[in-house]
Image 1: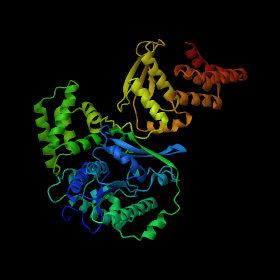
Image 2: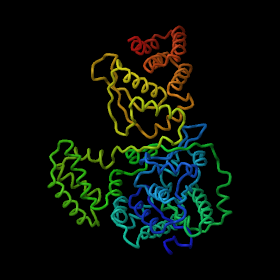
Image 3: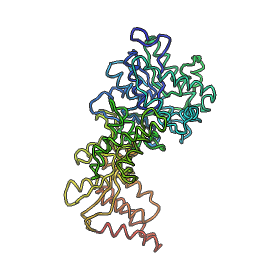
Image 4: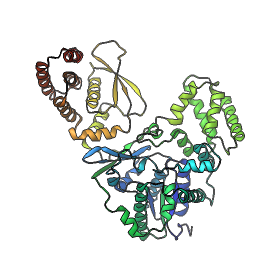
Length: 527
């Protein structure tokens, strides 16, 4: 550091753990101290034009950048960001201080054109054959990488003058790992790092004394490496490419906790969010929050229980040689003191607090396919807000608003957008009632983009999809099922096509078994 600026020897490389609150706090502290002129972040460069939206009041994490191939919307990738993600903190800092901020990872146009469809893409985490944190934890004598990370990063405060200490230590550790294991054996990492080096060089030409780079700690040694420009360009030459669209979409804590699909593999996003937000005394504040949840569920939990749980968590941490109680110690204390040894209420604590049903929000100005805009407009008009938690919706189809809600959910199901699933109605078997189980998953944004090929409105898209499905149906039962869907979804323009094909199939199909399979849907349609 020199006069409040970053070291002039080169870029300020801040190697982080994606979605790590300790890394996020340290990033914020370093940026406040260094005041760089440019901030570069690991992420898809196509999103640069969307970054100013992160400063809008109605942008609330968790959110994700969604990229999809224009000609094949199902080919997509997400880059999730939570409030405690270091990348989000760096982005917000740059926007608040009016500092240029850009993404420098391999473009999504190349990522989506990859041949290996099972490769999750850079947004899903560092793709290496070894687990860097696991290797470091094992070297330190830990059998649990999460516990090691909590002890050395999450439970370590950022004091005056030592904001860079954790980054320096992580870089040294990652350098040793890469010397031992190389790049992990993945050419894609080498290509990504070559692209990042080229973008860093371009930024340094603009501001030689103020470039900060926020990226996965695994990449820092490679970005520090003085590779030849020609060699980096050679690695990027001839990469396959597809035309790509990108936007912001809401994300959820529950999705962050999943290790498969587009999940980030964060076991406890609610706990991580608490560690990031708590100004002090995180254990006391957490156990108070747990007590409030249990009281709301009619369990007898007093302030004395909270005090005793704090003491037990601190004792357990001391016995286990930990600097501060972590999630394991607080969970054990909750089980013993507040739950009387039972895991049943503890499951509620994990579901509601440790993971949580937080759903982010994005501004209306975020780019969206026309079908998404129509769906959003209908959701607002019908007061049917997407929510991360599962809930039941009882509809009385004699009421116009409820009838419209039911038609919308049926149309979306026909389009493969499974926001709602029909459930058994509580009020009997009358056809004027419907019960739905609703849960909005982030991946439904991809399904909406895919369904956009059928039309620009929900009604037009569902009509076109029903007609196409009827033409391509293999059996009579499929067509009768479509006829039922058309009635439930109120698709009058599709129904004639479906009924014509149904009549033709019924006249030609002499198989009694096929006719029997078609009867249930026909009977329900008549009712």
